[in-house]
Amino acid sequence: MTLSTQFLTMLSMIGMGSLFGAMFDTYQRFLNRPKRKQWIVFINDLLFWMIQALVIFYTLFLVNNGELRFYIFIALVCGFAAYQSLLKGTYLRILEFLIKTVIAIAQFIKKTFQLLVYKPIVGLIQLVIIILLTIGRGLLTLVKFIFKVLLWIVKLILTIVQKILIIFWKLLPKSLKKSVEKLYNRTAGKIKKIGNYIVKWIDKLNKWKKKKE
Image (tube, rainbow, N blue to C red):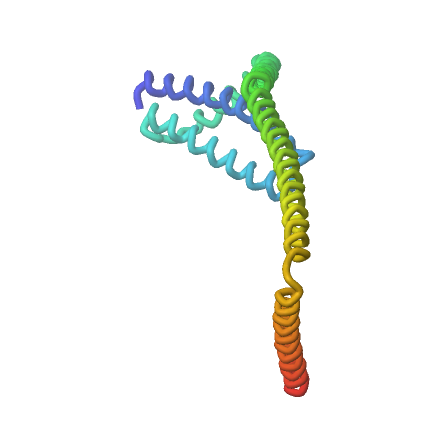
């Protein structure tokens, strides 16, 4: 390994140590350990350390084809220490500012969407529903009114027809009246017999069903 490669490796590992410190603080900021269950924290920690190890090894592979030296670990520790002493406070302030900015932008987009899209659509739907209900009630009232008018007309026609029939009945000869009355009585008697016959058969059928049960 040449001196330039070793120097580049040292710088890369110092940078990765500082980056690891920043990623660790970011991870801690978003994990919120006290409110998480222990098994979730364990899985997240395991994934975090695996990802960091893979990133560091991949960087080392790009720089010196993955050759491990003792000074590499020293460089990582130096980079992490440099971040903790020099960059941590500034980075955390920048991180908090970015988080607040993203939250503010998200809230602004949400409120804008609600104001310009969601509320107008909901208001339009409510207006359409109110209009349809109003039209439906109006049509129902109109139908009821028309039905009452038609019922009144039918009653009036039936009353007129009844009076006309009464007049015609009075004008009919007695012999014809008697014939009509006899025909009516015969028809009524036959209808009554048929009704009684049907009632008897229904009673027999019910009795047969009860015996079967």
